Image 1: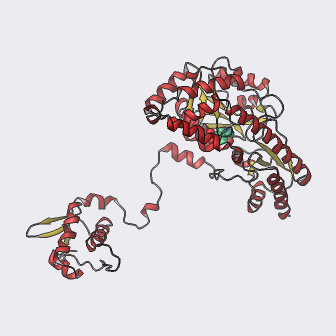
Image 2: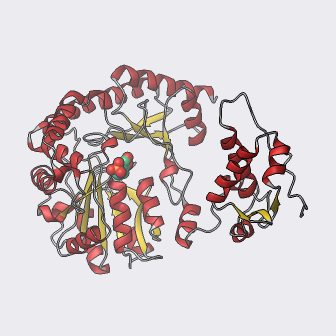
Image 3: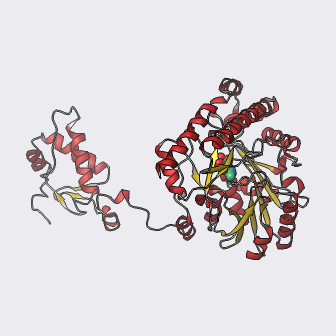
Amino acid sequence: MKYAGGVLLPTLRIDRESGRPIVAQLVSAMRDLVLSGVLEPGQRLPSSRTFAQDQGISRTTAIGVYESLAAEGLIVSHVGSGSYVSDILKAKAETISTEPDRHKRQPKRLANLTERASEQFFPRLAHPTKPRPFVTGLPALDLFPIPLWSKLMARHWRAARGIALGYPEPAGQPELRRAIATHLRANRGVVCEPEEVFIVNGAQEAFNRIGNTLLDPGDPVWFENPGPIGARNSLLSSGARLVPVPVDNEGIDVAAGLKAEPDFRLAFVTPSHQHPLGAVMSLQRRFELLQAAERADAWIVEDDYDGEFYYSGHPPPTLKSVDTVGRVIYVGTFSKSIFPGLRIAFMVVSSPLSEVFDRIAGATLQGASTMVQSVVANFIEEGHFASHIRRMRKTYMERHEVLIDAASQRLAGAVDVKPTESGIQTVGHLLTGHDESSVAKAAADLDVIVAPLERFCIAPIDAKGFALGFSTSTPAQIRSGVDRLADAIDSLG
Ligand SMILES: Cc1ncc(COP(=O)(O)O)c(C=O)c1O
């Protein structure tokens, strides 16, 4: 609507008590009217004299408001014919919705892959940030040697030169790649060159990179059922077609995998400590899996997320240690062995595939914090890592024993908590007729966190139960957690 004397602006209000300059108040209010489309492109504004009278302000102030708006390009002034809302905003007005909740709406158009993957994602689990019985995925945060860590950090800052402040090496800092290669050889039987070790911001990033590099949309991927949620979601977002493969007490059932999909492109496994059921993959299965991958010309991803912790005298063997042809991509993380907020993990990719990963890392400017990588390298090289692992192994062994003992007393007949030989979590099989999620909810009401097995499944399984972490809580907290879990189950009748 055109007004001979320019549009009326009855909604403008000046707050003279606010202390904010009048020009600024009016510019901001007018800007909102223009950008929200209330004032349309081409619409005539009152003359500065009329505007001054309408608003009860001086002419100079009114001119100041118009000049500011003109400087922002929101209005234009023509000598002799007055001021108008800028036409430049026309195109914008046609495409931008003026609905007040437009910022809250979801983006309309996602990439097909993301759209499909997000449909398949299960509701996101809360990140485990707060130690509570029986949260999984968190180490004993209270026992981490923070004074030592801050000393190492301070040492690096004191010596910081350009190299520490610049961009990191895309594949990882050489000193950390060397330290990890040495550590893996001695502790995990993995023989590799530092150039085959890639530093990443968490194992999750390794899974994303592997999926993006080795998979095309629709490629069949063997995935342990049940299996880890984060890795599953990474592979789905790479477009993988996940083939659920059952697991038993020897690990992944290779024969069942071959029956379901002999031409798989990649197999994702947790051989040292099946996640979440806890089996260590037998040697027989390791060779069967390597042979099946060789026949299908497939890759294998080994997720060794908590194999540093073992309780029976021998570390669980890695699959990579018996991989003579370089089919296995080994992924390790410091999230359990140092702390997850570090966001440092690594993958071992054998040559010649390592050259591809190296090129991609360089071309896409990847890399993790230079300073943090150097501190981790020192932590390992100076023996602190080995001492910390040794100390934690003892702590976790004790916490594991307390859990098994308390459960045998308080949860007998309700939850059968299985002893584990390695890792920082175990499985408890639900023996009552309740469904897993009701128990989990009743337990959460008592501040006890148990993760139902169904969350880890991409196809139904016979077992019912929970993943139970035992690393974050003290023995007293574990006992109290077991009591509360028993109370939660009792409360369901
Ligand atoms: C099976 C499994 N793999 C890997 C990780 C570690 O992931 P990140 O290194 O990204 O913390 C976790 C974390 O809980 C896990 O449960």
